[in-house]
Amino acid sequence: MTDVLTPLAYRIVPVVVLDEVEDADPLAAALVAGGLPVAEVTFRTPAARDAIQVMAERGDILVGAGTILTAHQVDAAVAAGASFVVSPGFSSAVVERCAEHGVPVLPGAVTATEIQAALEAGLDVVKFFPAATSGGPAAIRALAAPFPGLRFVPTGGIGADNLADYLTIDAVAAVGGSWMVSRSLISAGSFAEVSRLAREAVGLANAAATGRQ
Image (tube, rainbow, N blue to C red; front, side, top):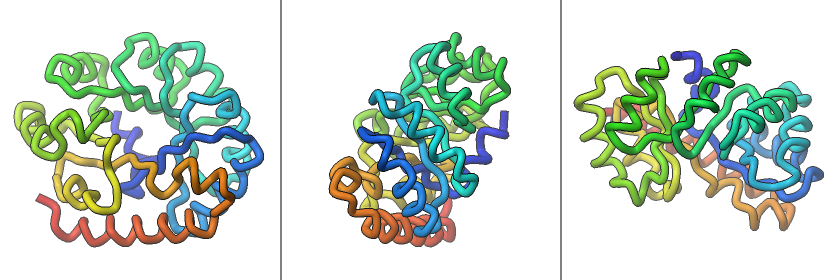
């Protein structure tokens, strides 16, 4: 299911928590201005579904839904315009419903057992979450060895200071992070800073691409 890599082509996926629908459009504009036109909007707030719809209707940013736990949430996210789905763990129900909708899904997997379940479901990309507390880059390298061809998207505890540690690993397709779209920046309306941090992150990702291992 390599089409899941399409939204990850930027190597960084901003993980967004939106408390107010009104912040969706300026946030999307800020990410686009920063050269990072992609976002995973988490289904953790009442505003999430409408925020995804607002961002998707712009047409200049690829928006997905994160923290998806149920098949019903998959339905709601896809109806709102989500182009991909991310879940914190592996759920057969979520994966199967995404397949029914024809939407790429990125389930969480940090153990060999979870990875094998994902592979048996026909997936070849998994979310490695929470990355920092699950062994970080060393754990990803260890898991990549017995699962050649599998790609990881580590998320959790990743920032500008350790971004390269992950992106220089061949098995890492992209990373998820919230440092450029923190709740505090969004609530303060600091969208110019979001653009600056997004631009900086893209630069760091490009630099890391020269040292992949």
